[in-house]
Length: 297
Image (cartoon, rainbow, N blue to C red; front, side, top):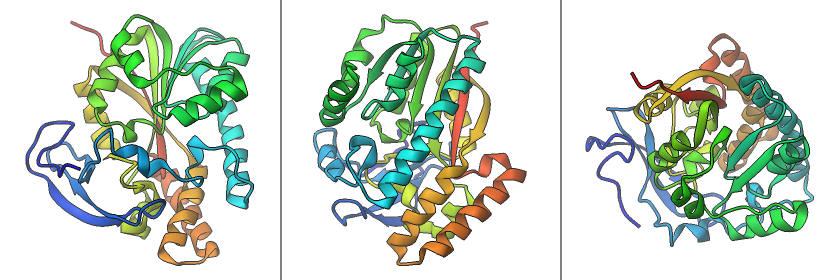
C-alpha cells in the first residue's frame, strides 16, 4: 500500500486529513480520507495497489459482483436496480436522440444493465475489472466483458454513449479512464457517470460511518464541484446532473448498521436527505453527471 502525498487528480501536494474510516465490509482495516484543497476531491489513503485491491472485494455482500443473495437487502437492491435500468435507458435515449447505437458500459458488474441495453437494440461493449463478475455476465447473459486494460489500450471503437455507473470512484487512474472515454466518444456522444456525493445530508449525518465512502474499494470521492473541475480538466463540458433518491435510503441503512443505529432512523435520514436535495439538487446522496466533449477552438 502507498500513502498519498499528492492529489491523483490535480497533482497538488497539499492534502489534509478529513477523517478515519473503517472497511466494514471485508477486513475491518482503517483508512484515512484526505482532501485536496486545490480541486476539492477526497481520496482514500493508503491506496492498495492494483495487485492488492482484489482481496477487498472478496465478500458475498459486495452486490455489484454477486447476484445470488436472498436477504431483504439483496431483494431491495435488485428491485431498485431493475427500476433504474429502465430509467437509465430512457435518459440515454433522450440525451443521444437515439433508440439504438453504440454503447460502452465501463464497470458492468454482472451485466444486467448491459444486457438490457443490448436486448433493446443497442450494440454494447462492456468492461469490468472483476474476473468473477465477467464470468457471471458471460454465463447469465451471453455477454463478453473485457478487462479494463483491453479497452484502455485499444482506443479504436467510437461510441454514442459511455457509462460509468458507480465505477470511476473505484479506479486507480481516473484521468486515464476519462481520457480514454473522450477519445472513444463520437461527435455529439454523451458521457454518463454515477457517483456518491459526500456533500449530501446523509453523508454529513453519518460522517466517518457513511457507507458510500466504502474504503478502500472507493479510492476517489467526488463532490459536484470537484467533479465539474475534473471533467473540465479532461476535456469535457458538464451538461447537468440527475439525483438518485433511492441511494439515500440504501446508503443510510448501511451507514446506520455500521454505526449501530436502528433502521427507522436511517429511513428518516434518507427522507430528509432527499427533501433537502429537492431545493439544492446537487445535494442528492448520489448523482449522475452528463457531459460531452468540449469543442476544440
